[in-house]
Amino acid sequence: MESGLKGKVAIVTGGSKGIGEAIASALWQEGAAVVITARNAAEVEATAAKMREAGGKVLAVVADMTKETDLQQLVTATIQEFGRIDILVNNAGIIDTFGPVDTITVAQWRWIFEVNVFGVVALTNLVIPYMQQQGGGRIINISSENAEQPDPMMVHYNATKAALNNYSKTLSKAWGKDNILVNTVSPAFIKTPLVDDLLEGIAKEKQLTVAEAAKQFLKENRPNQVLGRPGLPEETAGIVVFLAGAQAGFITGGVFRVDGGSVGTV
Image (tube, rainbow, N blue to C red; front, side, top):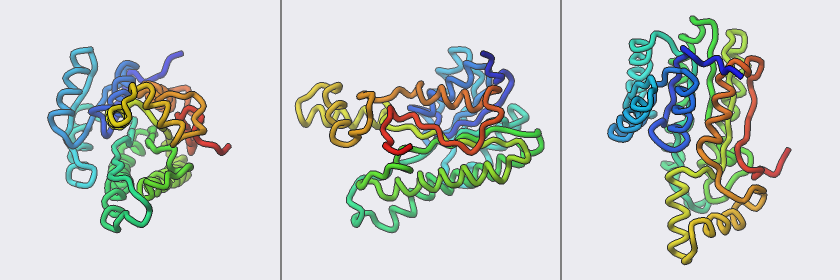
């Protein structure tokens, strides 16, 4: 089944590692030119170099999601290099910190919204005019199971992802007339560097193997996760490629879970 992504141009934020890297890699493997961006210059350049060596058409741009001048530079660099923007994957985000609800400060709330929500809004606003001029595009926002199944130790993170889901649905209603399709992908407990560090810490503390630590974490924190293992970044990337591709031309406003069955609602 042809994805229809050959010749398309995609921006992937937070594209230097983890889920973002997997998404960027999957898109260029389908023939898209990919612009990856992240705050860490060394990481984003190293990831881009690795993809180029494997045959990918990749541009690396260092950008901070909280700085609109950086986001404008990202869009400008993309247009100068490739002439268009067909796909925007808003993947960049932070967790910031864990703690009981009453310990999360207002400053921490503001900071996580700056990155996880306002940065997405700012970049999307810059990209939409190009998609309108081209006759359409795809926007895929990477959310989390926490939007629908809040974790009591991540109150401010939960709220940002719930806001992102609502924003995505609103965009799908606002820009459908311009053939701009907007969907949300909600992964959970994916084997990213952050999750690897978490599991290695648990394993060391409790003298377990990493696999045993993963099972214990799921049992205690995600009891509805029926598959009993962390997901792989590539498993999230697969649904993103589908939503960006030709076969998803009549899909917009949806939330697609990649969570091993963790969310307990319909």
